[in-house]
Length: 290
Image 1 (cartoon, rainbow, N blue to C red):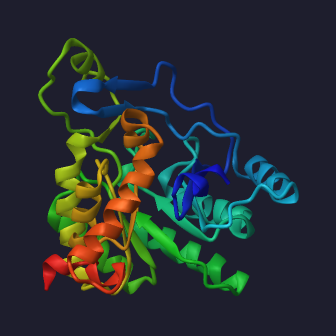
Image 2 (spheres, one colour; image 1 turned 90 degrees about the vertical axis):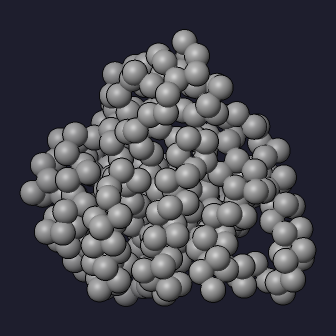
């Protein structure tokens, strides 16, 4: 409930895996202050889908559930081989079905060994088929989104988007964290960038925008895009929107800019809509492509 009070219009929890797991050994989060970047190698540390469902049921019963939409981020359990990933994702989706308004399939985190291999057409197709079967069984049309890696080539991203369009995926999240690193500007950033894991924050923004533009150009607005990666101001938020994002998401900016960054972005977007002569925010989505 605190998230909506801060100005967020939706919330995402996760990543959740079918089985409980401790995540990677600590320390597993590193700051690069001069870059306004974080490096994390969390590894989907969570108590497992069944335990999380119990906690969510408890929150609802205590009237602590947000009034705004809630997304669940689903990852592959570390102990499950890729050959059985489709069943793993589908099981978690089934367990959490009544406790989220939409679901994000995370096949692009760099912190679970082999996870990014699931972006291959054969693995991904089987995952989407299994998750669609769960949705059909439930008889409800909750959206399923796919989270992309910024480290894939443009051609690989377009292949994935094409499969998504033909497989009934309802949206794209662009993007996950990156394994690429900028040149360090301090001893702190050198230490952070030498660690394994995914980088988020300001250095990711340019590639995130490239992917948003690429996906929107390919889909022509047929499915929504969630823009994420280095969004830290009204300017970066607006650029993601006119590039094609219907929704935006931030994480690192909360660390470096504090919670007031949310209301600042919301107010800034409202001003840009008026200044640009749009009657609504939806008119601005993908405006760069007109």
